Amino acid sequence: AGSDLAALRTTAVLDGDEYVINGSKTFITNGQHADMVIVAAKTDPAAGAKGVSLFLVDTTLPGYAKGRNLEKIGQHSGDTSELFFENMRVPKSALLGLVYLLQERARERLVIGAIGVGAARGSLDMTIQYADERTLFGQKLKELQNTRFRIAEMETDYRVNKAFVDQCIAE
Image (cartoon, helix red, strand yellow):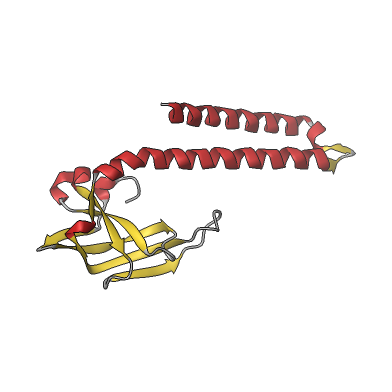
């Protein structure tokens, strides 16, 4: 469901002193190596996004399975996986609630934004270095008018996005 909590399909149904979790998760960072995972699951389907709870789940429990390691373009130091839950029973004490999800979601989004801004700066710096080193039509690439326009446009995009992320962090 990504950011759409109301569309979440993984469920956790209270059964005595345990919750029974069924569903799956895709694009989970470090899913192949995690000993513990935090799982968002619907505990009250009628409540929409407010009926979602977080659970601290031991990955050695029966009913937990790791899927394939997904290919991705970047961040190769952390795997990205599929996780499956089939009648997995967790104790009531594994319930973290919803408040943690709501509190940390904004911070997680800010981290993603900061990573993107940092990656843009690094890419721009490498582009500028390349344009300074590469010769084309008897002159450095950075001396060509179109290259200068493009680099100026990239610098502007970078600065606008950095200012936005900085403002979000300040707020």
